[in-house]
Length: 288
Image (cartoon, rainbow, N blue to C red; front, side):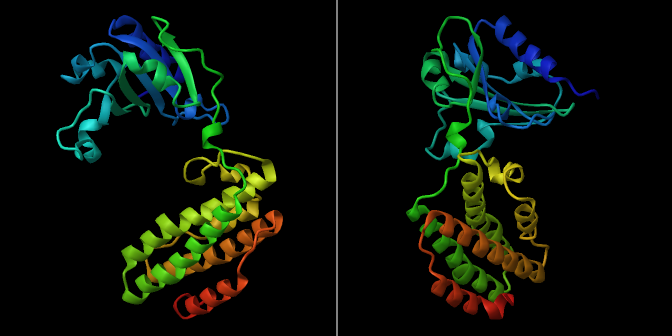
């Protein structure tokens, strides 16, 4: 199946919006609205429809066939957080995440038209595509400023270093000692990596000024020395404890080096005595 081009997809989205009187305004956010994001065919079309008669859209999903053959779809009805307050209320916002057979994807949000002026201002990374009634205020050019990282404060740096060391000695050693591979992976990949990505993002910001590191640091290779990113990739583990130990050891070495660089550049205190105590505690488990 031929993949539809970006231009074809935008024409399709706007064709529906123009022909359906219930749709009063359309804008796009996400990576396609980010002037600094690299462009490729895998970017989603993150689109918002400001609509009248919102319940009429939600009664049945047949109208979505207009956008093409779907492989699958997820909507607010399939997300458990929609039900956490009891009976779900979709009147203020609804979303359809649609993966199409040709490889394109639309994440389509519906909001009531009366909320459009407020909602369009909630994200600076936004491009207006259609406004039938002049509902929307004039907005500045799209920017990813809300997603940018700057060098840390002394408190942010301290908390990051403390959290990284605590996860190592307080959680990872315990998981490895107990033979809990799934738990150890979770500590490494969800929690330890979060702090490691912080210091890498801060180093990038020290080198280049405020910048958007991207979700899960995906843009960092554009901003960091190649050897830093290569070393970061060694912090991913295989499916056994030897892999976890190697990955945590690599993360420890990288974090120690980068945090030291940040502390020196920003004149932040860095408790090397604590670092050595934690290192000594980890040694039997990780062979640091």
